[in-house]
Length: 204
Image (cartoon, rainbow, N blue to C red; front, top):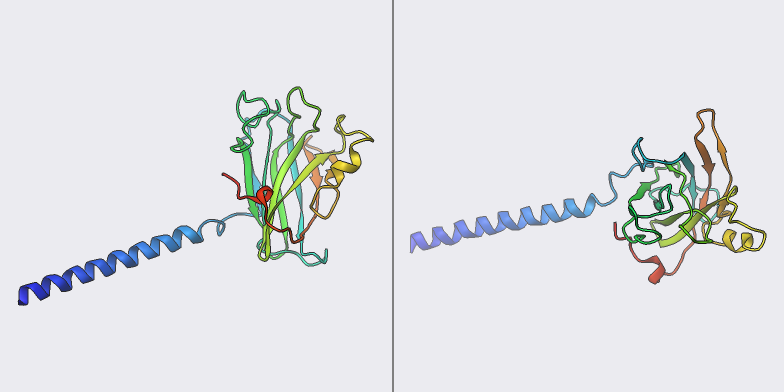
């Protein structure tokens, strides 16, 4: 009987230890999702073909003045040949090769360094960077960046392209710095967008 009690006690201790370790691992996994994300990222290696580009800005709360702390901005785009994946034409957006994610600090600032994307092959859509933005109290929703010098932006489609979410014009101006790098700026003003199929979580 004494041995039986001892065995039960040992099993109980082992079970408790396993349960605590499992719970601890789950919490660690859950908490590392966005906790270590930087507000400034580099999305491509130095050997990536294409013209270097830096885009930065500040994410604000709906008042357009208060920086949004803890906002998550995910961005992705085509390469210098207009592909999301190697040799993939316009396909592969679900798992794009060039992508990144940022998280703002108390100043609301973000920055991503990448290459200037090319338009889809054999397509009339202007070159662009896709984005998803979210923040505490603001579910994830899509935004997009277009570029002022793109020949595929016309008087006819300009209004429509500029009408995407983000709180500021979707078409941004790029200028070259003294190192020949394209530099652009866009602030984002958050809004509450009811979740839908369009706001589903990204697959990367």
